[in-house]
Amino acid sequence: MLRHRIVQVNGCSCTADDEEILKLSMRRFSYIRCYDSCELLAALKTLHHRLEKEKESNGIGGHLLMIDSIGAFHWVDRASTSLPLGGKNRKYLSLQNVLEVVVEDLRKLMSAHPMLVIVTKATIVGTTGNDFRRNYKRWPSAGTFDASSELEGLREPYFREYMPPIWQSFVTHRILVRGSDDHIAMPKSQENNTAYVSEWLLPRLNFLDKFVVRNAGVFLVS
Image (cartoon, rainbow, N blue to C red; front, side, top):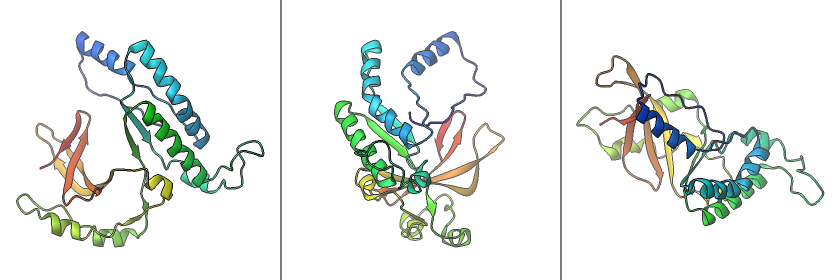
């Protein structure tokens, strides 16, 4: 996983078998932390060798690649259009060049190691907070859900797309995840959990999913 965050499990009483399963699972988890686009590109270019090495030692290939997030160095790259990467024949480190290389390396990696690639990126808000609140509709109560009316106010996205066309053409599915003002009380829990809403933008689906995130996992809210 590229530039991922630390995952911590709290309040878990694990048996010896559970600990062994956890150890076996973590051996199949590879984590790379990148601090700029150069390190991201270097990680992608060496990932094929790392996966081959893991396959030889453990007999298991890569099935899932997660990048969090692809827009982490967006503003740095936009401001670095005049910084060359090296010699005279090297490309300049611009946002467009970085994304071109990322897409090219991901295509090569997926052809050699067929896998699912999940990438996150932040939204850049294109409207003011007040505009967003006026356009945002609260989740309907049980039994009153109308997907068409709920999505009517979301046809015009409140964020603007900032990734170059080369990246947009590479993406096959897109989901918008955002927080809501709702707090849900889960069974056997005394805490109210913040609810989140996910919407399929590509392909466009006429329904929303509402969920909460807890230490035990992600739970859909009906």
